[in-house]
Image (tube, rainbow, N blue to C red):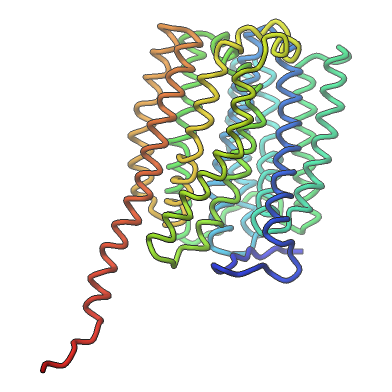
Length: 425
């Protein structure tokens, strides 16, 4: 079975045979909730069982997984959703990127002596295929398949975490079961949908340039965050990375809801691509306010979490996480307008503008976070991340709105030239 991605026209009430828009959004949120719960359980288990340095190694491995799946989403998934092309052939590109990234990560794990990095590298091809199949199902408005695969992975994660909390297996084994379980489910789902699982590219030169441009953009933005995290581990120690990871563990549900919302934002903005500047600007503001209103209660609850609850969830590392929660919660909130602006530029296919902006922001991110971590420890790094998230929000959202104004200004004279000249009197 192949899946052709369909994008609804503005004002369309739905596609026959697919769930209504409201039900699709609800199912997508349920999928995101299951993913959030599974990853939160994994992070809590590892944080409770490992010293803060081990938590830092886990955080690096998990962030590389986020980097790999995000790169596939930027170069493959988003292009498939935006262009409305067949999903099956693009799966080979996802596997290719996952395989290349997995090999590099596995070699790094062997060299660094980190079982977390090694396991993440071995499982990465299957994990990115998992993310691809799930995102396609959610993006085309048929998230029931994504719900089934997310339920299966949550069950595997729950069993592994329970064994870890009961001290039947150690924390790296819990991570391995999570990684290989997700990768295996991704391969099985792809085979069930008759997606090819052999690595390959098979994309035209123009499409390859666009994909490479947005992949570069992603690496300069999210990739710079990963580079900053790695640089912090090298300069300030994995304990600082571990403290940041412990704080972000409690914000895991918020950040995964943001990831789910980002999947729905791109097709939402794409539906108004042919509308006027005012309509498109309102759509961007509307979705930003809606997502912010959805996550604000969650971020407030986490930021005000009692100390006893933090210790219960994270053990001895709870105190380290507690001091960072307000700053990390602000980082999550500022990520909303940045994600909407990023999606808007993605819809407009303005790779040059996005790459330039990514270079500027990425060039600032790494030295600022590293210097703050070296001088002020985990608190300084968290403060720098929150401040940079605010700068990114203004930059990405402002760039998209300015682009819409620029397009509107160029269309207005053309319309005036086409207007008939009234006869003279």
